[in-house]
Image (cartoon, rainbow, N blue to C red):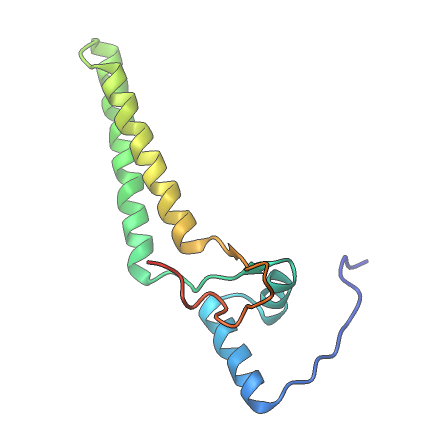
Length: 123
């Protein structure tokens, strides 16, 4: 049996429907997921730009390189482990920060004014 088995009919005018379709398309979510996200108190973010994925691949490649350097250095014993760990942690944090900034939904305002629907986010 489905987890979500309660259908709800919502009537919209043409302008509201166009706005919904536009926002759903920007988010890359299904219409149902988009609406459930809003109901649960979050504002879905727009899909990240195509270069986001290239940046993430590059950052991950740097991380892999750091790991390879660390393995070689540990075998030879010629690395400042504290400095390497510091840099590796900075890289991990940068990757997580980029992912969070671009893909994580934001909590809606608690004052009930949701008119901006996430359009006025800081960069």
